[in-house]
Image (cartoon, rainbow, N blue to C red):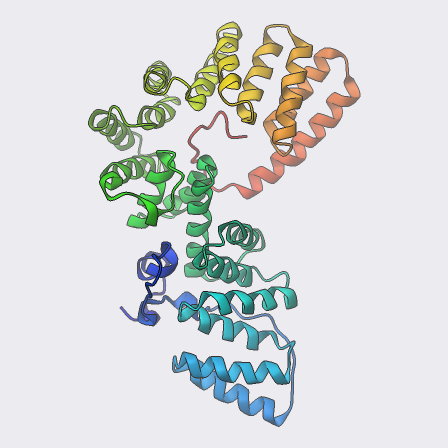
Length: 406
């Protein structure tokens, strides 16, 4: 398949082997495997420059770029931007040529110039983040890919999909599993069951802080099974997901996080079975804080705050820096009458996650019960603001740990 025919995310992701997974040192992906995203349909940020020499170079550079003579195009655009250093299109097309050739370092440097000249261009941030990913500068890569999602990349589905995928796998790498699954769930909402998406969903489902390229071969089958189950969960194929998670738990009964993942799926319609799966996970991993949290939240949902309190205390003991554990404990304390204790726990949670709508909502109730009406009003207002922002940013309902991720 030629680069020109890779015009959708489904094919673009399959074509991009150097960007869709971290390469081992010394490997190089042929430029022929690059997707159409290397020549984005998005218009580069506009800028103005004139003069006969400038126009001649632009014509030559454009011809080289359209003929995919990338090295020649790079040199010609270099001459263009020497004449007009603020000519954004010149930097843009030089950067995409570097991207096509997997020359990540000059690609990064070029798109740094683009975003300085056009700080609202989301597509430029996407390319910058992808080049940083190629350089294994993961923290900056994730930062810039998130920025591109916030700004939008225009009507370029292949670039948007590649940026989304890399955002998700890097969230998994830093153990933001729920956020990763939520992001990958956008592909499921589109009906995109690309094997790379399934693999990434499986890694996040099994809470493995790895990039796909780092996945051990012996764990790949289990990961793909988990990914298919989560994909069906995201597409609301309840019967299929139930069968897939059940098979996963049967085939890999002693593997970490398998029973937890199955329990999360079961929470919506089979809560008793979900509790049994969480407790099975705790038999394998007695200090598994997420199972403890899920059990606490389920008992809170049932109105059994006293039982929830026991589990929430264990969750905080195992994961004192996890804000959902603090939220569960604060809510359980509030419902059992320890208002001041609830406020202390919820305030501790807000120090960890000041942008959590759920924490602000719960602490507003605690302040109200304590007679701190001004504080309650402020917390309610902040909840409203953050909740609106969260709903705007989220796509779809896919979330492992639905009770605890906000």
